[in-house]
Figure (tube, rainbow, N blue to C red):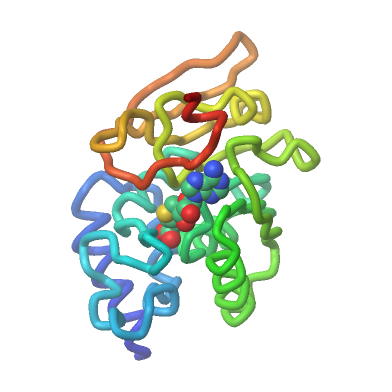
Length: 214
Ligand code: SAH
């Protein structure tokens, strides 16, 4: 069995299923994506560790559990149009691309977009549109989305992202200050937007004039 899949299966069992990840599609997908392909070579032996890892440019690949938690909270079905803010390594992008119909992913660091694009192409994942820029603006030309996942922290959800949610859609975003955030799910229904929380987390900041007004 290839190293990646054995490691990924063990990660799913020990870090996800043993906690509160119950969505069978999310568990199966996380077991099928080789996480070592998304981390720098010198960190390969840590690829399935229970924590985030540095991927360069001051950024991190999120802890597997946090990727699973956000993905589960977003309720991504196979018809879903998904927007991801903060491509980073592309690991969560790969998970979402396997679960959804199409993924639009926005990253502000050119080198990360370029690298993630190559990694997904190598893994034969093609239903992804890579965009460079400020994700706080969302992607109006492809909206509305059934799920929007923001992998960077903001003091409040950017209004343009809430505006690009389809009815029935969910926005998952870490809301808080630089040191501690609450993973928050905004659900757009016929009657408005409801809100619930899914635990605490710690993400790098969403770098945007919109999300952090001076
Ligand atoms: N899910 C990713 C996590 C990436 S970390 C992974 O597992 O690899 C968050 C990413 O958000 C960083 O790459 C950072 O550059 C990016 N980011 C921060 N602010 C942004 C913004 N306004 N628009 C787009 N990307 C942003």
